[in-house]
Length: 229
Length: 229
DNA sequence: TGTACATCAGTGAACGCGCGTTCACTGATGTAC
DNA sequence: TGTACATCAGTGAACGCGCGTTCACTGATGTAC
Image 1 (cartoon, rainbow over the protein chains, first blue to last red):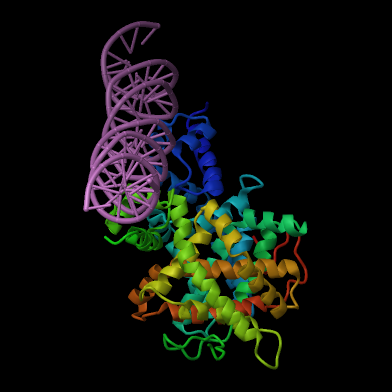
Image 2 (cartoon, rainbow over the protein chains, first blue to last red):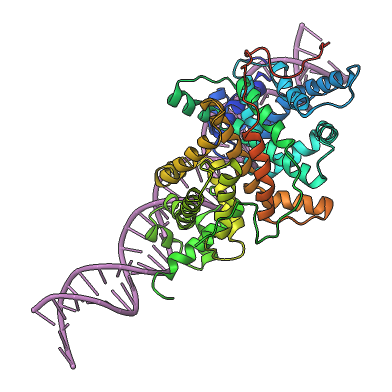
C-alpha cells in the first residue's frame, strides 16, 4: 500500500458511510473495515472521529466553494443589468455542484446528502467548523440574496432563507428515500439534478412572495378561522 | 406516589428531553432521573425505549389529529365556494396546533420540535408507526392539497409537498436556535406562532409557482450559465 | 375475621455489548557521522 | 560502506465507559374460601 493511500481510503469509506447512515450511526469500526485499514489508523491520521468528519467535509467543500466563487464572479462580471435574480443565485449553487470536479458518479448525490446531514444532525463541532471555514462564501451568498430581494424586511428575509435551507437540506438528505417512494408509486425515475431543478422555482417563488404586512398577535393566527364549535 | 402517576412522569420527562436533545442523544438514565423514577420503570411500563418514543408521539398526535379533522370538517362544510385554498389548508395545520389542548406554555414549541425531529432523525420504527397510525388524516391532507393545486402534475406536486415538509420540519426542529440567533443579531423576539405565520405565504407561493415545463437533461441545468473560463 | 394465594407497581444491581480512544510495539526508511 | 539513532506509518490488543435490557426480589393490595 503506497504511503498514506490509507488517508484517502479512510476518507472514501467514511464519506460513503456517513452519507448512507449519518454520523452517530457510523462507527469507526465500520469505516476502517470498509476501508481495509486498522481501527487505530483513524485516530493516528486524524486524531479523533470528529476531526475525521470535518476532514470529509473539507475535502469536497473546498473545491465546491472555489467553483461557486468563480461562478459568482462570472455572473457579476456580465455586462448590462447589475443585480442578480434569486433564480440566478440559486442556479449558481446547483450549477457549481454539478460542474465541480467529481470523484465518481455518486459524487453529487453524496455531496447533497452530506450537506443535508450537516444541517440536520446535531453535530455542534461541525457547524462551528463550517461557519468558521466557509464564512466568506456564505456572506457573499447572503449579500447577493439581499440585493435580489430589496422588497423584504431583514427579518422576513432571515426567516425565508431558513425556509429555503430547510427545504433543500431536508429534501437532499432524504433524496434517496424520496426518489425510491416515487419510483415505487409511479414508476418515475428522478435524478438528483432534476430535484434541484424542481427546487429552484419553488424556492424562488417562496422567496419573492408578498412580504408579511402585519404580524399577528400570538393568539390570532393567519389561518382562515371558521366559527369553531 | 399515586398509582401509575409514574407513567405520566416518564412521558413528561421524555417529551422534554427528546425535544431538547433528540432521541439517540437522550438516554433512559437521563429520562428516569429527571422523572424521579427507577431506571427499570421505562422497560416495565413501556417495554423498550422505542415503544416509549412512540408513546410520546401518540400522546400529542392523537388529540392534534382529532382537532385537525374537526377543522377540515368545518372548512369543508362552509356554504359557497367548494375547494379550499393552499393557505386555508396550511392555516388549518397551524391553527389546530395552536388551538389543541396544551399541557403547558412550552407545549406548541415542543410539539413542533418533535414533529421536526421525527422527520429529521433516523428512526425507522417511528416513521413506520406514524405512517400506520395517522394514515387517514395524512391522506385527507394530501387529497385537499391535490384539489387546491389542480394545475400541478402529480410528480411536481409530490416534490413540492416534500419541499414544504422539509422547510417546516427543519425550521421547527431548529426553531429555538434560529430564534436565538435572530434575537442576538437584531434584538427581535419571535414566537413560534409568528414563524408559522411567516411560513404560510412562503410555502403557499412555492406550491403555486409555475409548473416545471421542461425537465433539463442531466448535463444541462436550469442555471443561467455564463461563458465560463 | 382470618388465612393463603395471586396480582401488580416498582426496585437495585448486574449483564453483555459496542463504542471511541490509548498504548506499547513493529518494521521500514531516512539521516548523521 | 557501516553503524547508531530518529522518524514515521501502521498494528493488535486492551481500556474504560455508557448504553438498553434483564432478573430476582419487595411490599402493597385484591380475591377466594
